[in-house]
Image: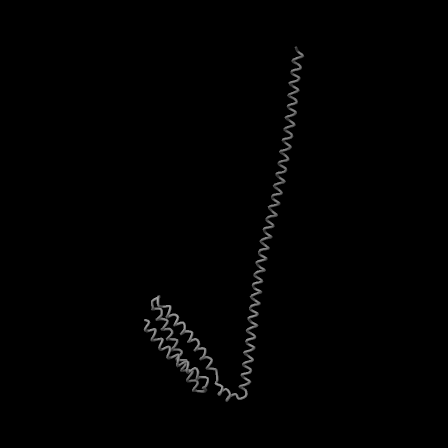
Length: 217
């Protein structure tokens, strides 16, 4: 399996080298010659993508203990192809300095100045956008903090209200207990008075009985 992978690697290296060389030539050409070279590079890039697919299939068949090394190599090849595709895209719309000057003359300088000015404006817009995004993120975080504070205040308010309700219940229970204790104390005093009255009556009855008994003798 690894031998097939290495064969694909060799083909990959050969084709990508050719593609790199042709991409460098595209901006210097024009007309039909440029069109033919673009079509040729596009076809070779398609072959490169097919090679990557084949290598990917081969890696899946390689034992796990050896697969990491091949995955790393395949990843670097994919990155290389991505770079080639970007370079190819730029080369298709680019002109060499000679062709640009020949076609535009003095306007080429103005075009470059406008392009630089446009890039500068684009960079400023990107910086402003990043600052706006940072400001928006801060605003979102501030809003989240505010919501958390409001939620905590609401929770604290509920706790305070529950505490007040418990205090009212406690006061009511204390008042009820106080009335019960007062009633019990009143009954105790009444009972003691009754005991004293009954004791006095019994004592007078005993004294009267003794007196009458002595008098009869």
